[in-house]
Each structure stands twice: as structure tokens, then as C-alpha cells.
Length: 338
Image (tube, rainbow, N blue to C red; front, side):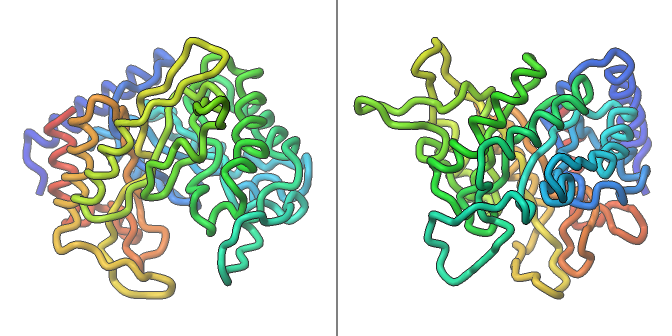
């Protein structure tokens, strides 16, 4: 049973979040949580839990092939409900435009990914395609989405079977330009890198022996899926990176962790993750490492509720929408460090 102090703190956090929503402000919380890929199925109680636990942001993923199955046919209604509900709870929104690439938009692979075909990870054939997706998102959600992420885990062949130069040409540059033309103030992030801080390779181009940002992104970002010790090392690598523009007096030095997490693995189809003995403590330690950094601005846990109960990825049990006990110390740490 929750303590009286815990209940009071949760109530205070909820009232504060609702105040931010009423004022139309960006929530200043350094804590975020991912919604399932199937965000429309996230129950309202999960949003209540997020706010009461101290999360101020939710990250919503928009799978391209689902949102735009045919060119120019956009189905933002599939995630609009999740965004509306989150904002009504005072939560700020991070929207990720990501794979799978729809069949009609797929080009050719130009990176050796071994024997894994992954046709949905093929790069788009034309930079105009991703620009149109980004433009439509920015027009649809202007004033309701607080940041955009242009792809996800592009260094992994399961996500993007193209070279870094092709990512910049086909997604980062056209996506950034399209969104910035519609919304001059929204924050724009490039695609995350999976367990890697190789930002120079993916986000910059070489010229005269130097490397420069392909676009003046507001932040860079990383996904951390390893034991806390390895995660801390990658956080250190990430915070030591600086990307600067060739044409503008601008450098980016701050980053987000847009995914990290540990499953309470139960065994099942496609579940190969072996969790540490103390998943709640591991999540707490990774989050604390980000919070102690002067450059890691925000972290998003993966995810708020199970999308596959057999794998156990999610803070809340899918059937009861209650916090799973193994994550209690993680949530207690967030509540104790607002």
C-alpha cells in the first residue's frame, strides 16, 4: 500500500502538471516515459500513473508505414488521441517519426547488413518523401508537440539500411527543414543512436579536415540498453561530444536519452533479453547517471505499459494497469528527486 507521503506527493505532482497544461507550458521535468507503439490502446490510468510518479513528458512513436500507407494519405488520428490525452494530463510530447518505411517510399540499401533483409528498414528513395511526412506532422501538431525526433536507432540495420550520408540526405536534412519552416521554435532532434555515441559519423559532414553539423539540431540523443556500468560509459562518451555548424555561430552540447529500460523477462516469442537481477535498481542507476550529468537533459523510460506481456517491457502490468513491484525503487527514486 502506498504511504501517505507518497500519495500526497503524487497529488502535488498531478496538480502541478495540470497547471502547466492550463498555461500551455512545456513541462520542465527531466523525466519522460515512452508510450507503446500501440499508443491508442494505452489506458487513461497509465497517464495518471505517469504524472503521479513524476514523469513530465511522454514520447510517442509514429511508424511511417502506418501513418502514411500511401503517399499523401496521412492517418495522424492513430496517435492524435494519445497526444490529446497526454496534454490534458499536463504532459509534454516528444514525437518520433520513424521506421518502418512504407512500401511505396522504399529505395535501395547501400549499407552491408549481412543476411538480414529487413525491407521495411530500406532508406526512402527520395528526400521529398520524408520531408512530406515531417511537413504534415508539423502542420497537424503545431502547438501540441514539443519536440520531434527524425528517425530512431539509425545505426542499427533493423532500422536503417543506409549509410550515415544517406541518412542526412534523405531524412535528417529534409525533415529538419520541413519542420522548421512550419514551427520555428519547436525542438528538433536527429535520430537516436543505439548503444553508441558515434554522433560525428551520423550527424556531421567532413570539410577541410573538420566536421560540421548537417543541420543546427537542438539536441542529440541516444538509446541505452545495457547494464548500468556500460550505460554510464556511453553517457560519458555522449556528454564529451560537441557538434558545431559551419555557417552559424552555433554548437550543440546537450542531449536526451530517448529510450532506456529493463524488462522483467518472462520468456516468449522474440524475447532474447536477459535482464539484470535487480531491474528496478538498474533503471534507477542509469537514470541517476543521466541526472548527475551536466549535459544529459532528459531521459525517457521504455515503456509505460507492457506491449508484449511475455517480454515484460513496461512499468505497468498490462492486465491490472498497476506498477510491477520490481520497478518500485525506480519510481521511488524519481519521486524523491523531482
